[in-house]
Amino acid sequence: MVSVKDIDKSRLPKHVAIIMDGNGRWARERGMPRAYGHQNGAKAVRATIEIAVELGIEYLTLYAFSTENWNRPKLEIESLMSLLVSTIDSESKSLIENNIRIKIIGDTSTLPQSVQKKLNKVLEQTQHLTGLTLIVALSYSSKWEITEATKIIAQQCLEGKVKATEINQELLNQHLTTAGIPDPELLIRTSGEFRISNFLLWQIAYSELYFTKTLWPDFNKASFIEAIIDFQQRERRFGKTSEQL
Image 1 (tube, rainbow, N blue to C red):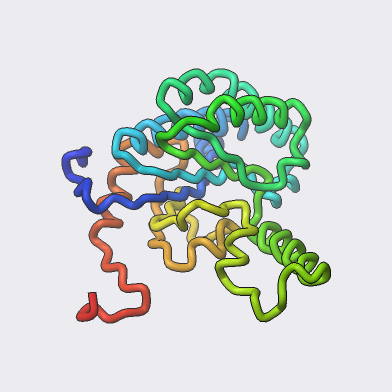
Image 2: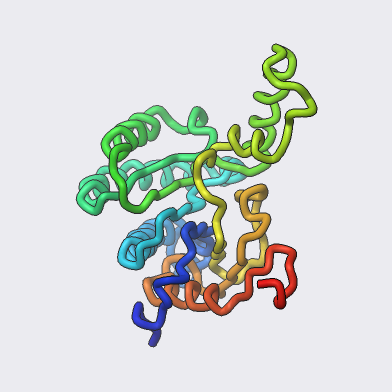
């Protein structure tokens, strides 16, 4: 069994992003409704945050609800939103006690007012904290994000604030929802699927990808440690040769 002592603390990724997948299949295997899987998936979220804090990870991004997830059955969406509100209520005190700052990325205007109200409260309560930055992607899709950033830049060009020749990668970065946040060095996806699913497409250009068959409710601290150990065995060249490193 792996443990924290197996990790080289000097080579930790600064930012880890996770596509949390497999709640529905986990529940189906147990003859339970999908909501049961989401409820148990919340336990995996807690465990992941705890180990990220213990290791000293600076940024953790969790893909909680995609733009495409709005196409799911109405009952499941209502269950997810209810779970989100109850989780914020139950975990906000712990987040503050552990110096965790919350950031939300995505089109939050599409979320129910009850969810928006809870999110705004926890954002205000944690904005001054200096430990782990927990980024939650809600009603998020990368294509939406890049499109919105492009609209802003196009409007700036029309207003004469930006010239077309001044548009570069840094300018686009400044208008993404992740502005000011370093790109993830490690992207984890659970449940055995090998897809990115419209998640941080711009930001993961040079991320190390780690796929595990573990369904999200079964993902625990040891699972996270295994992903970090695998990351530390990679040679990150960024277009260079091994000899240049």
